[in-house]
View 1 (spheres, helix red, strand yellow):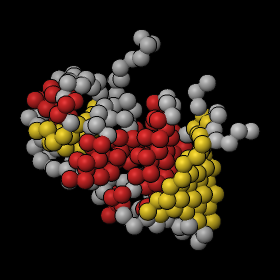
View 2 (cartoon, rainbow over the protein chains, first blue to last red; view 1 turned 30 degrees about the vertical axis):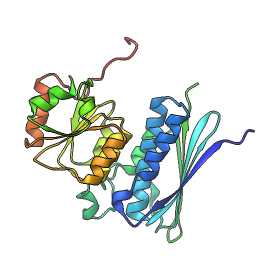
View 3 (tube, one colour; view 1 turned 90 degrees about the vertical axis):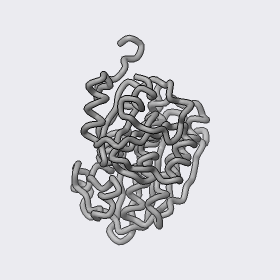
Amino acid sequence: MSEGLSFHFDVDGEDFTSAGQASVQVKKDLRRLGLDPETIRRVSIAMYEGEINMVIHAGGGHAEVRVEEDAIYIILEDKGPGIADIEQAMQAGFSTAPDTIRSLGFGAGMGLPNMKRYTDDMDIQSTVGVGTRITMRVDLPR
Amino acid sequence: MKICTIRDLLDAHVICGEERLGDHVYSACGSDMMSDVLAYVKDQAVLLTGLVNAQVVRTAEMMDMHCIVFVRSKQPTPDMIELAEESGMVLLASDKRLYEACGILYSNGLVGNKVKKENGV
């Protein structure tokens, strides 16, 4: 199996203003690869939501985007507090984000559901007190 | 609708992206919640909002939008303008309120959910 192209980013958890920088860069990188706009849009929205989540809840983390032959994989890893009840976190509208984040236009409880909506597969591995690893797959059009 | 028509209808001033005022847009949405924009918006080219922070520009960029209209006399910060210029986005500012600004554009033919059909399908 051929080795896919991959991009790595450290997501700074200190500053909400800079959240999303990695997603903007991924969008540029994928455009440069000549992928179709809808695929790029889905990947970058899913990653952007994930990046925002890492900044709000986990104090930052690490993101990897891997371009394989048939699909793009987004892997987000943090050492945050973990998600106690994943099923509950997946419900649209459920949020533990503080009011300060709501006043910035986020924290409506749409992050995880949105990530699922824009991807073909999403897997969440999370341990309370240890961290969270989310793997998303966006299939490339044939 | 051309972006310059939006400027005229909303009595807005151009903050950046003057060179793209002739671009055509086919739909718009209005919201102060970026989470909702990311969740419910599809193929809309113009975002009207009263929220002012860098995430507004990034959200619009993620959604492939062409233009942001800041309502209620809100002014974007220099770093937001820089981000918008980098991604070739038009920023407009109007003193109208969100409801009124959306209503004016809607009643002049810039719709919400209807998207331009591709390949005649």
